[in-house]
Length: 194
Image 1: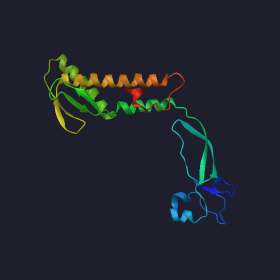
Image 2: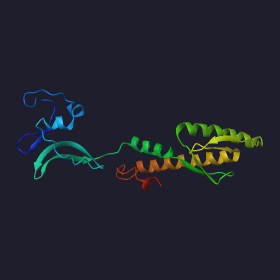
Image 3: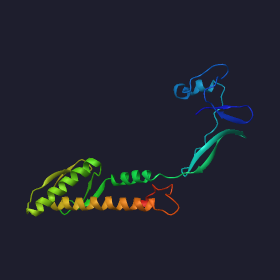
Image 4: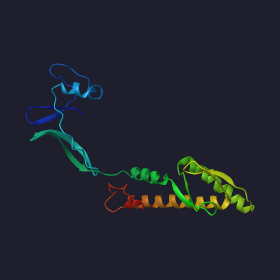
């Protein structure tokens, strides 16, 4: 956003009117170098930013001692429940440490969508192996891209850990959405999800 000095101690958001009898394109900020922009005889106020728990409902520029600054009209930020759902899904997809009966005590697995689909299939296979008293193993790719042969008991342990993660994040997300007073703006804080 470009602001022009009105000469009276305030700034105005430039929306494309001529500057010095020259009509410039609206996207000059993206196209021009900082030196070329500085030559326009415009003054860019300092942008203090908007706090994470607020939204801007308007803005103006004002000049004070030490230069100009954008002054925001702030309102409280409200969080859409779909933002909580996205955070829940992000946390579900984080790598998961699982204790398995064979091999090293703990392995780390991927939890992205494709990996979850594969795990579902392997847990189904493991259930059939247990029913048939099978002893087969399947080579499985771990989070660090190494492979490990796992048996039916291992995959059932993985499936149990995956289900526990999904359930925990789902109910923690539900609790965040049900917070008295509305969804907190810091809903991504670990304090809500651990």
